[in-house]
Length: 88
Image 1 (spheres, rainbow, N blue to C red):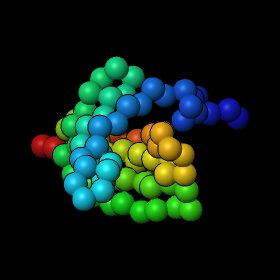
Image 2 (cartoon, one colour):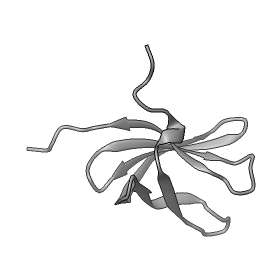
Image 3 (cartoon, rainbow, N blue to C red):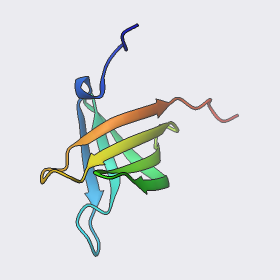
Image 4 (cartoon, rainbow, N blue to C red):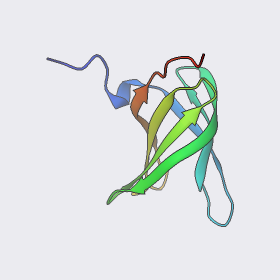
């Protein structure tokens, strides 16, 4: 069974907050032409060559974004998306 789309198929652009370090955390991202604001960074962890961010966006949904820290351009990828039920 083939996945419906891969990470490479999704157009993702990320704007980051830069404090003491460059690109400390995502604050806004554009996914397939739509802009989302990051309301909260819920978790952050590091792999051998990547940084991962679990975030809640202004649409109420959860996203996991991955930044390639091993390359100078630091490409971003959408790893996971979870649609959350609307709050009552």
